Length: 90
Image 1 (tube, rainbow, N blue to C red):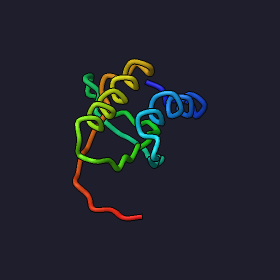
Image 2 (cartoon, rainbow, N blue to C red):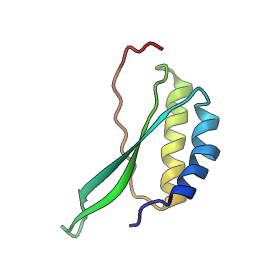
Image 3 (spheres, rainbow, N blue to C red):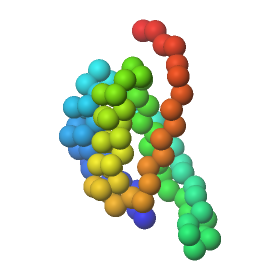
């Protein structure tokens, strides 16, 4: 499994993420590690996509469609999702 090149990631953001969340989002660079089914420990540069959104069905559908598109486009088995309520202000 290889890291997604920057140009392909930017294209994914433009084509998939931005249309669903045009109000904005944040991307953080990270380093991921997991244990493969073979037992081997693997490490890979990763990105965290932070979306602040209302708790509604449209947002839920948008997030799930982003996850599905990422798995399909980049041949991933899974895409982590963590959801936490937040109070924010700008």
